[in-house]
Amino acid sequence: MEQALLHNHKTFVVFAIFWLSFSLHSCVEKPVFAGNEKVATTGWDVAKPVLFEVAITDTITAHDMLIHVRNTPEYAYQNFWMFVESSSPSGVVQKDTLECILADNAGKWLGKGVASTREISVMYFEKIRFPEKGTYTFSISQGMRNVSLVGIESIGLSILKEKENGEK
Image (cartoon, rainbow, N blue to C red; front, top):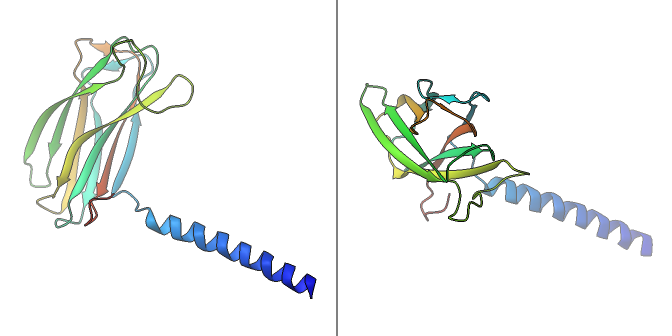
């Protein structure tokens, strides 16, 4: 009898763990797009933008777009300027300039990371609806005064669906 109860308890625990992990996994929605491109370790050339091509099929749901900047301690500045150019499937072009603060006034790096590399995300668009289906192109260039910018390791772009209650 005691062995049967112990077996039932173990079965219940295994089932509960499986159910909980499945439930948590199904609550996390995958991004519509997530891409990350490394830049040259010798420096990011001002004439070499990072490109992302994104296939959009949903023109009804609102989306959030984030740009992710990963930097190393070799980066010499507190902030980072970037030029973002987006092109719609029909050729409509929009140009934006974004600033990303990478360090506080004391020089401490912001963002998340392991060891000395840090990553910080900047909201590019919030609750945007794409006007048309098709492939959008996003071009991100460094907007600093350096011809070759050392210390930026990679640039990423993610597009997330906005849920009805505002959670992603």
